[in-house]
Length: 194
Image: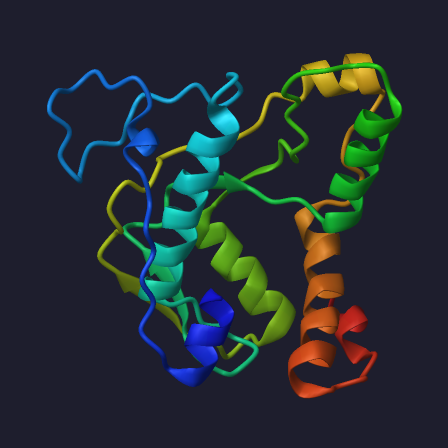
């Protein structure tokens, strides 16, 4: 529905629930309260489903454009020192298949522990896609975590899984796929810049 609203320029109304606050530590609850929800508890399906709907709605509201491939400047928020970990989709699929085919239950971190600052990511994207692309710095967004890196010890031990494709190898594959989807470009030369 969000995709349709975006395409036709319609207004979108989401009706949520007070369950997004879970078992609140703040009373009464204001709209800015983040909540106290057990993400894997017996009530979590409904609670987290509604929280996800709110998240997606706000993401669409803020808008997410595809930069660089369209020759737009790359945006780095804040000083770019905040870190994230990036994973190629085939690694994730492999981890998910091992999890589904196994006997283990419970949360597993199926991420890539390779950690990059957002500025490093922008520079890798620049090198891979367009060395002339500009990097623009903007005021950091609200609630932006400083560090993000998964501990995959449990997945390694119980699933025998770890990611195989590092960012610098996965990014050119992703770019090639995006170029084909967005522009119908079937050029193979992106692989040569890896």
